[in-house]
Amino acid sequence: MDFFTPDFWSALVSIIIIDLVLAGDNAIVIGLAARNLPKEQQKKAVIWGTFGAIFIRSVATLAVVWLLQIPGLLFIGGLLLIWIAFKLLKGEESHNIQSGNSFWSAIKTIVIADALMGIDNVLAVAGAAHGSFALVIIGLIVSIPIVIWGSTLILKWIDRFPIIITVGAAVIAYTAAKMMLDEPFIKPFIAQNVWIKWLLPIVVVGGVLFISRLSKKKDLVNTN
Image (cartoon, rainbow, N blue to C red; front, side, top):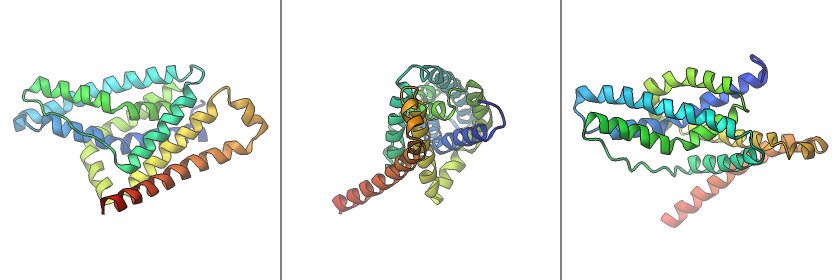
């Protein structure tokens, strides 16, 4: 992908939005893991734990970018991202994180928990990068400082403006559709049916938003 083209900028914006929307989990993990430490150790545990988690996530993202070049995995990854977008809108997140009682155990908890919970982020960013390692690195450089110092602020924004989650889920769903369209074995079919290139993203994004809304209404009815 050429630098400073419309495709480059749209992909970079998608990566940053995905990082910010999915940063809520990162903030929760950090807060829970460090909550039992003395106040003077909490900040250090947060900083070192976060940098450790970011390193693991960066390596994993670059690895997934490489793996998505294997035939068929782009399509499968797209299907997984659709499910991730749906879960994000439903709010199905589990945060059963035990807090560390020592400095190093807190750091270990932050790194391990973030690695396990960050699979959605890794897959979404790798898909949005369209095979470009440079885009992943640039996206990380831009969004990491925001995630580290602004994660709690992001959580407050999400609580105050729930539309942020909807926008994030729509971006992830759109990324899923683009991943599926980029799959080599589908491209010949798309070349003969150009309209699918425009219809699929609309159907995927609209479908995720509509089905998640129906699901929420059904859950409310069942609860009442």
